[in-house]
Image (cartoon, rainbow, N blue to C red; front, top):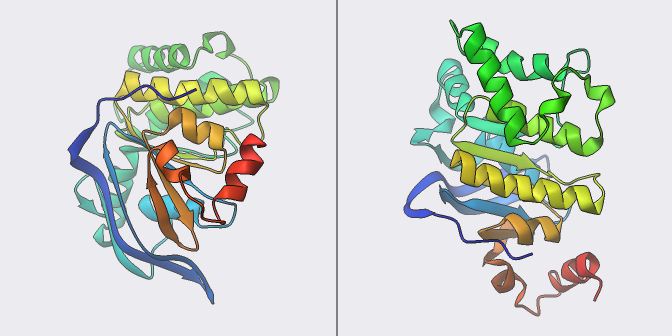
Amino acid sequence: MEKAKAQINYDNPVISIRNLEKSFGDYHVLRGIDLDLFQGENLVVLGRSGTGKSVLIKLISGLLYPDSGSIDVLGNDVLTLDTRSLQELRIRIGFSFQNSALYDSMTVRKNLEFPLVRNKKGITRKEIDQSVESVLDAVSLSQTINQMPSELSGGQRKRIGIARTLILNPEIMLYDEPTAGLDPITCIEINELINEVQQRYHTSSIIITHDLTCAKMTGDRIAMLLDGQFQRVGNFNEVFATSDERVKPFYDYNFIQ
């Protein structure tokens, strides 16, 4: 279940966050966090529900703005980008939503074609077909190309959602609770797919989860978010080598000691 070592360039952070703060009214979600994602790395942000994990990736992609701090993504200061520049940056970032975010009225093919047609002007029919076939092969679902989302299982929908993100060849992947609502076997398959994407597409990824099996299988490094700050950062064993009473029950619940 341990993750194989990946080729990571620790001299090249593709995301750098410094002293980031975000509150909603009197609720302080993020309290001055620092974080780096390095080129080629799968970084797991781990924590309980409601700790600000999903808020973090919305801040990274410019869907929310912080109260203070800085966010640098692929050499861009996200907080100073105009609308057009932010949209151009988002094309370089793949966002895998928790609910897969497929259009129910479109076939799998049409769902995958949509981001290509919208973002790549002048793309040919042959190029579209090749791209669709390539990402479906990457997620091992070529046979679903003409099916509707309603005909797919939860795991298949999750895979197609990832495929639709990959079709624009993103440099960074942001996964929001990728194994939520899936059975244990399908969870393992999604975790393996996340690692395959890292290897095949040379992506750098942030994986938001509260699932320790997902964290252990996919994370080159793990950052545990507690009380609005990253309290533990390291590999899986390093993060959980602690007597911190905020951490132990979390581990025990996942692995049933």
